[in-house]
Amino acid sequence: MTVTRLLSLPLLALAPLLLSACGDEATPEGGVPKGEALPAIAAPAGQSWTETVTITPEGGYLVGNPDAPLKLVEYASHTCSHCAEFARTGKEPLKSKYVASGVVSFEQREVFLNPYDVVIAGLAQCGTKEQFQPLSDQVWGNLESVFAGLQGNPQAVEAAGQLPINQRFAAIAEVTGLLEFFAARGISADQGRTCLTDQAKIEALVKTEEANRQKDKIEGTPTFFLNGQRIDGTTWDRLEPQLQRAGAR
Image 1 (cartoon, rainbow, N blue to C red):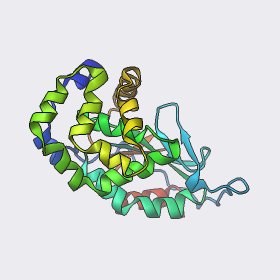
Image 2: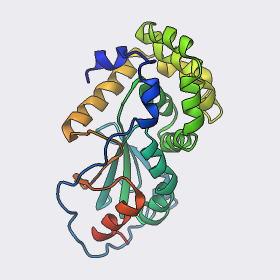
Image 3: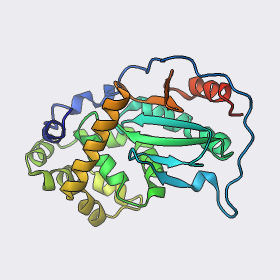
Image 4: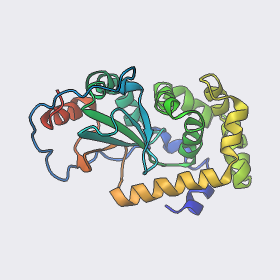
């Protein structure tokens, strides 16, 4: 999907699709090699791996040891119910048990299934890099109410979708309640508007997503990679055994 096409998609046509927006489960491209248990790697003095955040060259937000021997990447959409399920059931054990040890890092990369994803990502990335994953988890943890806001005022959404790019996404955030949602979580309405009216920033965000999606052949969300290799499953009960097989304990 080109930048022009994504930024010009009609919002109303997408609204009924949000609840089924996620793609099929990822399929494996080969088994994860079995490895011996890897020893824990201590964080620098006074630091914690679960509070260490790095923005990667791919534009992802990585939590944990940047040099961890096991690098888990999730491609996720903020309007994906399967991504919400992983956030609800998998994030806490992933971070407290595996990321905290320094053996596993966890990187989240964007997938845009619709223009709402652009708005939400623009707001989630509007704060500090440490805020990004917690804000994403807040969206997934309140997905039902987020959907209600997205679908609650179709006429206003349609009108917002007709505005120029440098006004469109801030207007969508306003009429869908997303500005208010993020303001309650540390991103002020003025801060959010500033981020969403920065056309160059929005277009760069979309171009990065498009390049990553094409390079890694992403067809559904969530899709996971471990050390650059696509792995099977979208749920924590299927991912954890593969991390353990690769050496995480």
